Length: 166
Image (cartoon, rainbow, N blue to C red; front, side, top):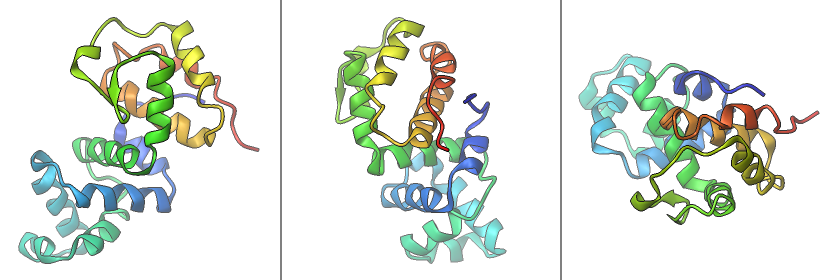
C-alpha cells in the first residue's frame, strides 16, 4: 500500500470514528501553535464566529473537527499525531522497540536522532506490528514518514509489504 503524500490526504482516508478519536485527543491537549488554526477550522465548518467556536465544549469541538475533511496540512499533522498518542501507543512502542530506538511510551527521545532507518530495519520492525490492524500500521508509517521523510524514507518500501485486509 503506497504512502499518501500529505497529512491532509491521510486524514481524509481515516474512518469517521478514527477522525473523532484523533479530534477528541487533540482537544484534550491542544498544541498552542495549532489552537487558532483549529478554532478557525471549526468556525469555517459551522459558519460561526471564532469566539463562538472557542466557547464550545471540547467534545463538541472534536465532533465538528472530525467532520472537516480538509483541515489544512499543519492541523492534519497535529491530528494524526494526536490519534497515535491517544490510543495507538502500543503500535508506536512495538515499532520503536523493534528498531531499538530510545523512546518514552512511544515518543522518541531527543537522543534517538540519528541515521535514516534502512529498508531492512524497517522491514524487521514492520514484522513486530503484525498483530495490529493493517490500516492502523499504514497510517502510523505514513505519519512517521511525513514528519521526517529523510529519516523514515525506507518506510515507503516497507508500507508496500503491509498485508491489506480482504
